[in-house]
Image (tube, rainbow, N blue to C red; front, side, top):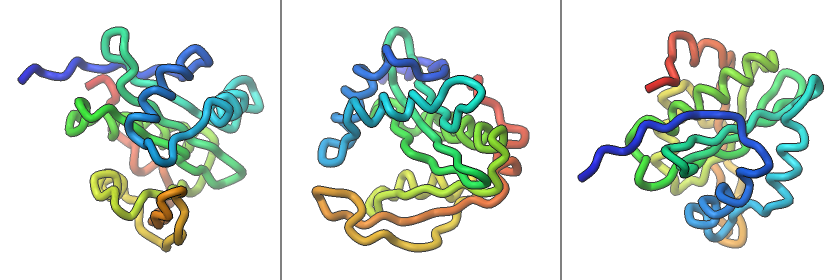
Length: 168
Protein backbone atom coordinates (compact mmCIF):
# COMPACT_ATOMS: atom_id res chain seq x y z
CA UNK A 1 0.00 0.00 0.00
CA UNK A 2 1.37 3.42 -0.92
CA UNK A 3 1.26 6.41 1.39
CA UNK A 4 -1.29 9.10 0.31
CA UNK A 5 0.29 12.30 -0.95
CA UNK A 6 0.11 15.31 1.34
CA UNK A 7 -2.47 17.68 -0.01
CA UNK A 8 -2.37 21.44 -0.23
CA UNK A 9 -5.45 23.48 0.63
CA UNK A 10 -6.31 26.55 -1.43
CA UNK A 11 -9.27 28.70 -2.34
CA UNK A 12 -11.62 27.14 -4.91
CA UNK A 13 -11.76 28.95 -8.26
CA UNK A 14 -14.09 28.67 -11.24
CA UNK A 15 -11.65 26.40 -13.11
CA UNK A 16 -11.95 23.88 -10.27
CA UNK A 17 -15.67 23.34 -10.85
CA UNK A 18 -15.33 20.54 -13.45
CA UNK A 19 -12.91 18.38 -11.41
CA UNK A 20 -14.94 19.07 -8.26
CA UNK A 21 -18.12 18.02 -10.10
CA UNK A 22 -16.44 14.79 -11.17
CA UNK A 23 -15.56 14.01 -7.56
CA UNK A 24 -19.00 15.13 -6.38
CA UNK A 25 -20.72 12.69 -8.74
CA UNK A 26 -18.49 9.81 -7.63
CA UNK A 27 -19.08 10.43 -3.93
CA UNK A 28 -22.73 11.56 -4.01
CA UNK A 29 -24.25 9.94 -7.11
CA UNK A 30 -27.84 10.29 -5.93
CA UNK A 31 -27.76 13.90 -4.74
CA UNK A 32 -24.75 15.54 -6.38
CA UNK A 33 -24.65 19.31 -6.72
CA UNK A 34 -25.00 20.83 -10.18
CA UNK A 35 -22.50 23.04 -11.96
CA UNK A 36 -24.87 25.99 -11.43
CA UNK A 37 -24.92 25.43 -7.68
CA UNK A 38 -21.13 25.63 -7.49
CA UNK A 39 -21.05 28.71 -9.75
CA UNK A 40 -23.63 30.42 -7.56
CA UNK A 41 -21.69 29.67 -4.38
CA UNK A 42 -18.37 30.88 -5.84
CA UNK A 43 -20.04 34.11 -6.96
CA UNK A 44 -20.50 34.94 -3.26
CA UNK A 45 -16.97 33.92 -2.23
CA UNK A 46 -14.97 36.90 -3.53
CA UNK A 47 -14.55 40.54 -2.65
CA UNK A 48 -15.31 42.65 0.40
CA UNK A 49 -18.95 41.49 0.53
CA UNK A 50 -18.05 37.76 0.46
CA UNK A 51 -20.36 35.50 2.47
CA UNK A 52 -18.87 32.17 1.35
CA UNK A 53 -15.61 30.27 1.73
CA UNK A 54 -14.84 27.39 -0.64
CA UNK A 55 -11.65 25.36 -0.64
CA UNK A 56 -10.09 22.55 -2.62
CA UNK A 57 -7.39 20.11 -1.55
CA UNK A 58 -4.84 19.19 -4.20
CA UNK A 59 -2.46 16.25 -4.16
CA UNK A 60 -0.12 16.62 -7.08
CA UNK A 61 -2.25 17.82 -9.98
CA UNK A 62 -5.47 16.19 -8.67
CA UNK A 63 -8.26 17.59 -6.53
CA UNK A 64 -8.77 15.13 -3.69
CA UNK A 65 -11.21 17.11 -1.57
CA UNK A 66 -13.29 20.25 -1.31
CA UNK A 67 -15.39 22.09 1.23
CA UNK A 68 -17.66 25.11 1.47
CA UNK A 69 -19.28 27.35 4.05
CA UNK A 70 -21.95 30.06 3.80
CA UNK A 71 -22.37 32.80 6.39
CA UNK A 72 -25.37 34.94 7.20
CA UNK A 73 -25.23 37.27 10.17
CA UNK A 74 -24.06 35.38 13.24
CA UNK A 75 -24.67 31.95 11.73
CA UNK A 76 -22.64 29.92 9.27
CA UNK A 77 -23.68 26.75 7.46
CA UNK A 78 -21.29 24.11 6.26
CA UNK A 79 -22.57 23.48 2.77
CA UNK A 80 -20.31 20.59 1.78
CA UNK A 81 -17.20 18.63 2.69
CA UNK A 82 -15.95 15.81 0.48
CA UNK A 83 -12.75 13.79 0.34
CA UNK A 84 -11.79 11.04 -2.13
CA UNK A 85 -12.03 7.55 -0.70
CA UNK A 86 -8.23 7.15 -1.03
CA UNK A 87 -7.84 10.08 1.38
CA UNK A 88 -10.23 8.76 4.04
CA UNK A 89 -8.45 8.40 7.38
CA UNK A 90 -5.62 10.80 6.47
CA UNK A 91 -6.98 13.78 8.39
CA UNK A 92 -7.88 15.71 5.24
CA UNK A 93 -11.55 16.05 6.23
CA UNK A 94 -10.46 17.54 9.55
CA UNK A 95 -8.12 19.98 7.83
CA UNK A 96 -10.92 21.15 5.54
CA UNK A 97 -13.31 21.47 8.47
CA UNK A 98 -10.71 23.44 10.44
CA UNK A 99 -10.42 25.95 7.62
CA UNK A 100 -14.19 26.32 7.36
CA UNK A 101 -14.38 26.99 11.10
CA UNK A 102 -11.61 29.57 10.74
CA UNK A 103 -13.67 31.22 8.01
CA UNK A 104 -16.77 31.18 10.26
CA UNK A 105 -14.70 32.89 12.95
CA UNK A 106 -13.46 35.49 10.43
CA UNK A 107 -17.08 36.08 9.39
CA UNK A 108 -17.80 36.66 13.12
CA UNK A 109 -20.31 33.81 13.31
CA UNK A 110 -21.37 32.70 16.78
CA UNK A 111 -22.54 29.28 15.61
CA UNK A 112 -22.09 26.86 12.74
CA UNK A 113 -24.82 24.54 11.50
CA UNK A 114 -24.75 21.57 9.14
CA UNK A 115 -26.83 18.69 7.85
CA UNK A 116 -25.33 15.24 7.58
CA UNK A 117 -26.89 12.07 6.18
CA UNK A 118 -28.05 9.89 9.06
CA UNK A 119 -26.23 6.95 7.44
CA UNK A 120 -22.89 8.82 7.19
CA UNK A 121 -21.40 7.78 10.53
CA UNK A 122 -17.84 8.64 9.42
CA UNK A 123 -18.81 12.30 8.90
CA UNK A 124 -20.83 12.45 12.11
CA UNK A 125 -17.79 11.26 14.11
CA UNK A 126 -15.63 13.94 12.48
CA UNK A 127 -18.10 16.67 13.38
CA UNK A 128 -18.46 15.38 16.94
CA UNK A 129 -14.65 15.50 17.40
CA UNK A 130 -14.86 19.21 16.60
CA UNK A 131 -17.62 19.79 19.14
CA UNK A 132 -20.74 19.65 16.96
CA UNK A 133 -23.84 18.36 18.69
CA UNK A 134 -26.91 16.75 17.14
CA UNK A 135 -29.97 18.99 17.58
CA UNK A 136 -32.58 17.44 15.29
CA UNK A 137 -33.52 15.77 12.03
CA UNK A 138 -34.77 16.83 8.63
CA UNK A 139 -36.95 14.01 7.32
CA UNK A 140 -36.37 13.08 3.68
CA UNK A 141 -33.82 15.90 3.26
CA UNK A 142 -31.59 14.07 0.79
CA UNK A 143 -33.43 13.39 -2.46
CA UNK A 144 -34.15 11.37 -4.52
CA UNK A 145 -33.21 8.72 -1.94
CA UNK A 146 -35.48 10.21 0.74
CA UNK A 147 -32.69 9.93 3.33
CA UNK A 148 -33.01 11.86 6.58
CA UNK A 149 -30.46 14.46 7.64
CA UNK A 150 -29.05 14.84 11.11
CA UNK A 151 -28.87 18.55 11.99
CA UNK A 152 -25.77 19.47 13.99
CA UNK A 153 -24.65 22.70 15.64
CA UNK A 154 -21.38 24.08 16.98
CA UNK A 155 -21.44 27.14 19.20
CA UNK A 156 -18.35 29.39 19.24
CA UNK A 157 -16.39 27.94 16.30
CA UNK A 158 -13.25 29.83 17.36
CA UNK A 159 -12.72 27.43 20.28
CA UNK A 160 -12.65 24.41 17.94
CA UNK A 161 -9.78 25.73 15.82
CA UNK A 162 -7.41 27.13 18.44
CA UNK A 163 -4.04 25.50 18.12
CA UNK A 164 -4.87 23.47 15.00
CA UNK A 165 -2.48 23.19 12.07
CA UNK A 166 -3.38 22.64 8.41
CA UNK A 167 0.07 21.91 7.06
CA UNK A 168 0.09 18.22 7.96
